[in-house]
Length: 358
Image (cartoon, rainbow, N blue to C red; front, side, top):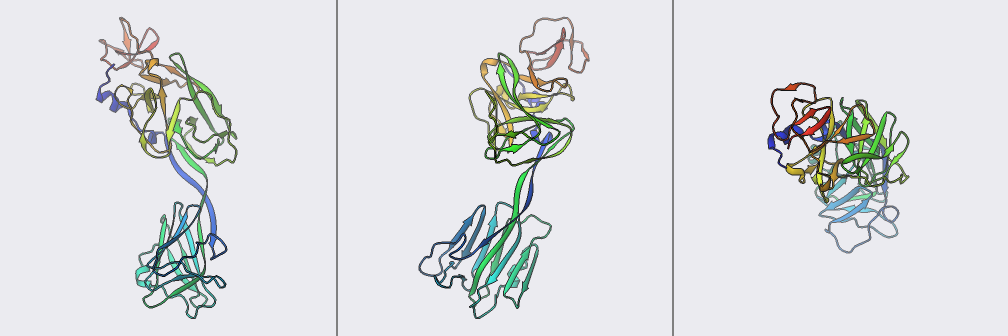
């Protein structure tokens, strides 16, 4: 079967048309203290880069190392050292506490720190340095030590956004797909999440997750609900795995994979009220799937080009026949009568049934 590029372009309405993703978060503070919490192992010598990691927070020092005295521990940053704190989550606040036995207060290079977004303040006679975020998303913050000054730090507090769930927005079409490879998510009120398997040449719902139920990690689902933004909270439960689910996905944008034909959720080009799964590339070949989106992989033996999700059916996607006989009258899915036989690849209605012209 051949599907023209124009036909594909009309079908490929990428999934962000239907659903958008963002994070639902609250604050979490992590304290780094030498020899006590999230510290490094001691190393010999100075001027060696070193790094601390905890969760998704990383603290590193350039042109220095985090050296400390085993009986009176501290982080020591040398002249012109660059202290960098980064996180996968948004950084909300950083507090640096001066070591009590240090003969001098903090001395950070304010000229270089002017490029930092947010507010940098000092307290307790410059013995405490505090940075708070502004209105922008900040994932990395750096502090520079003044030339000729060694900075001694007793502890570092880093406050980041702790994600408690994922916010997903459905458009007016009321459908979307979702996939999280490492997160189990709870279905919010107003949403149904469905998985699908194949029965002959027909897709049927294999499981429906309803409000309060947990969608297992690495489970692709079709979402159905009214237009709006919904919060899918993270769950400590594993959830009940579906049987024979043909929906796959990826946490990052990448090519679809698997054995079979590949379909993406799209708006019906012949009836804007309908949504279905259509080839994402010529002849059902692999295409680039978006982050946290699900795609459909169906055995090639099914021999279908598209699956229409009918508005009146909430839990089933019906097959679209690839066979068409000679009929006297043809209609578009919108009910408009055609004056002649449609071109190959067109989706039409004849004798009350949907067909793809071969």
